[in-house]
Image: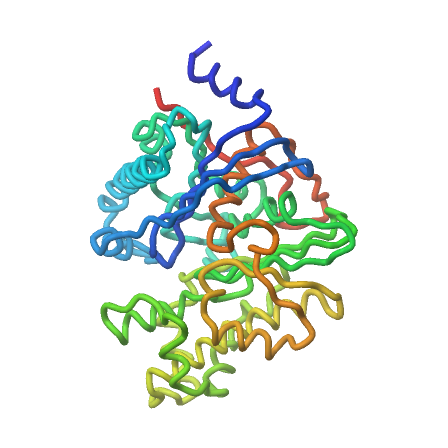
Length: 399
């Protein structure tokens, strides 16, 4: 047997596994790196977060990714080059983090890499006849494996699509394994570039678990800030939006799209919710005259209304607690808007469940890798459309 395959078998046979989870989101703030210790699998999974860091991206990296991100027409050679470049760059950031933590790469069993999404194309969005759902993340796993010397699992979303899903959201799998609790209905709300949530029923019935994208989280706000305030990448502490007042006509126009009427679950991305979408909404609502501050306040309100509307529409009168994660939880005006729109809900964050909300997505991909190695597909049941019961991850060997 190939010695690395033998090593992989040994890893799967261990009582405890050390797994690094990686997440690089659409905000391009940096690479989230979570060093996790796993024991068990399935509903018996026990996870300890040993270390976490976000390694910031430099301006060159951001510029390179933005040149091809979420665009229908790009330089194909650049895509090809960046697939290798990002893999090597992420390997370097992992090596630097391990050195800072005083952890040798030989102590790490596997790496779980999400990659960098550059285009998300569910059939409901692209609308091209006879073409399937599709999504594309780059940052090749082989380059990470070779650059770190650690077995790497990557490309998780492709299996999800191949099995009948839309490639997102994937949080449902890890949310169920790590955060379900008997007798407590929980909403795991992640506000990244796109906002999504998982409903975890207190009776632990997997057939009732529900996960969906709901619309923009930070993506439109970030894009607008970057356009209007060069050198600024996001609205820190909602400082810009707080100076403005949201315009109800613009918010209503932003909500005027068939996506919001589609059945759940569903998925979307910046391919829809981008600056062109905002421009059209302003034209339709005759709000081109608004100040940047008023537009930012309106985009903030829009994200909150989309999130809360999806929760109330899909869950009705169910009593639940909300646990936040993702960059949007640091936006105080967004959280204020959510609290105002859901006055009866309890809103907390995942730190109360033992996982840093900033680390949660990286931890979830580490969890997917653990399941790929030692788990069994979660029996969501045939009626759970777009949540296939599959294990995910392609394996790259370092030799």
